[in-house]
Amino acid sequence: MTIPSNKKEQLFNSLSKANSTFNEIYPGDRSDRQPVHTLYGGANLFKSDAPILLGQRALEILETYAPNHEVFGKAFGLTGGTDFSKRIYDKVVAKLQSEAIEDFRIDFEDGYGNRSNEEEDATAITTALEVAKGMQDKTLSPFIGIRIKPFTEEMKERGLRTLDIFVTTLVKATHGKLPDNFVVMLPKVTIPEQPETLANFFTILEEELGLAKGTLKMEMMVETTQAIMDIDGTNPLYRFIKAAQGRCIAMHFGTYDYTASCSITAKYQEMDHPVCDFAHHVTKVALAHTGIWLSDGATNTMPIGPHRGNLTPEQEKENMEVVHRAWKKGYDHIRHSLWNGYYQGWDLNPAQFPMRYAAVYAFFLESYDDAVDRLKTFVEKAARATLIGDVFDDAATGQGLLNYFLRALNSGAITEEEVLATGLTLDEIRGRSFKKILENRAGK
Image (tube, rainbow, N blue to C red; front, side):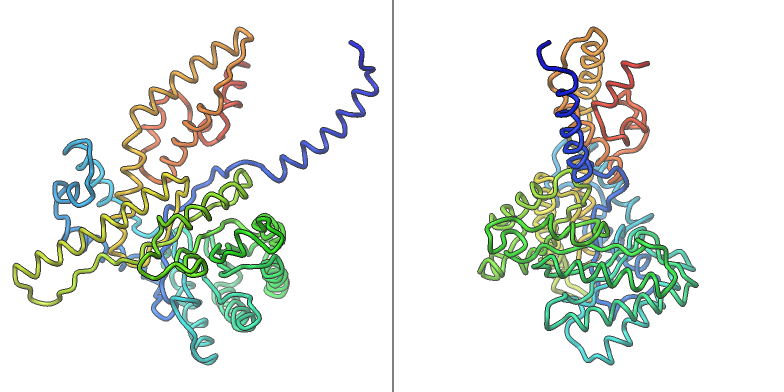
């Protein structure tokens, strides 16, 4: 050895600080449950039992337009035979019966529109009281929040006023409590000062209302070109996250505002447009391994038939065709999002729930058997290599397989028993680290 120990330690100490800083910025993906969708609904329409009623409506729509797994499988073009279609169909039915809505965003922005201050003030109060009632009656979705108006110069006063009224009313009605997984969505973010200001207002609200520090969390929307590339030619998203002072948990993509900002005409403002893919990839690269959840947007073609009332056979047939066509379009969009590594998206109507869960479950279950075999083989090969002191140089593939099982489990596509078929424990899966699994097994 030529390098003196004291010089080595000096250089390694500096490197250790840099490595620690890197690990703080990139802690890795979160292992807790991420909802597979967010339902956006106008604040003026929200009621405490909306998750239950909308779930019932979604089930009625499924039973009307896909009364059995054969019709269901044909509508979505499912491959894998009748048993596979039945497996997906049964899972979708069970999901709609038990938890049709995973995440609800009470919308004071696009889904509510610009109204008088008096009307929005009143809506902020009534929705807060409805949320309080839902907390008491246990009728809320597992994740819930509000979308306020943006912190642009024109809308900042209105956005803050709604936030203040809503949170103040809710906290007073519940004697200091917020729903589990409550979040505030800030739309149309273009500069770091917007999330920074919201974070500072959160601090004031917490102090004034007696909430624990850090209770209020935010999400931000990527829906402008400036959120992808700023005037300096750099991506600003991590600066947005940093400005949020540890309060931002997710970034959601706004399909239609973003495509409009790219001058895409209305006919072609679709989720799978190349400009959206570019924004998705840039966002993914900018925020990968930071622990920030990413969500895609919505399909705006609603699976709703044109005819109402007492229908003729011809009208029923046309309704079926319209719904199936819209279902398949939305299904393909969701599959495209999943293929790009976006495991959450938006829904705008309960008629979209069947296509959401069909796409998610089919995406994961199509590769389940192969993934079980591959992960088993990887763990066995890696464990042998570790035991004899050899190098296992394909850990990235093992990590990818591990991520698949965690995503599939969190989405409800597979059960805990189906995860255990890999030979791993639930703790190992939720630990998210293929490297640590190997190290722990080698130690034992």
